[in-house]
Amino acid sequence: MRRAGRTTTGQAKAFADLGPQFLLPYTGAPLDAPAAFGRAAPLILEIGFGMGEATAHIAAVRPDDNFLCCEVHQPGVGALLKRIGEQGLTNIRIIAHDAVEVIDHMLPEASLDGVHVFFPDPWHKLKHNKRRLLQPPLVAKLAARLKPGGYLHCATDWQPYAEQMLQVLGDEPLLANTANDYAPKPTYRPLTKFENRGLKLGHGVWDLVFRRN
Image (cartoon, rainbow, N blue to C red; front, side):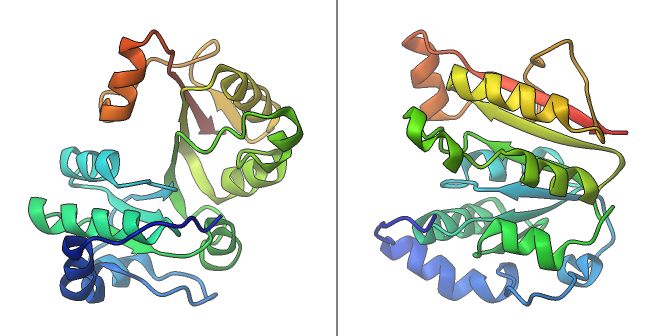
């Protein structure tokens, strides 16, 4: 869902200075990842990175991986471009387009080593639950695009959504849970400011890590 928002001067400058190098167009044709990143490396897809705080951190601590990031929120894209410049990151590419269309048309089966979906919109109201991103059809598409042994890592701070994620991921025959239910937070995923604030208020956070059979 394309959200409203105001791009700051710094974000606009990042678009102008760094966009040509780090923004990839939506082409509808299979992605040549080694050409896009200038190297062959494990490819991780991130769906919806918000303002890019966690994305930049993970890319910095995992320099040997390539991160393909989808986000339609323009201020968020600008914010991540700004972080890329400030931190000197080279292993991120951004497609500012609907992630489902990118998955359908640009990512062949068995092309990904991992997928990150962190804090997607929980759509709290029961009547809106069907709008949640992680539904069986999308999970099936993601599982098919993972290489054998590749992983899907989801995180949420809304328990009903965590429970739904656990059921939907557990029902996908191509995926196996790496834990009995919820996984310990992987060390590469940082605690964001938003998450820290929630934890101090007593809110929970749930990580789920499944692997492709």
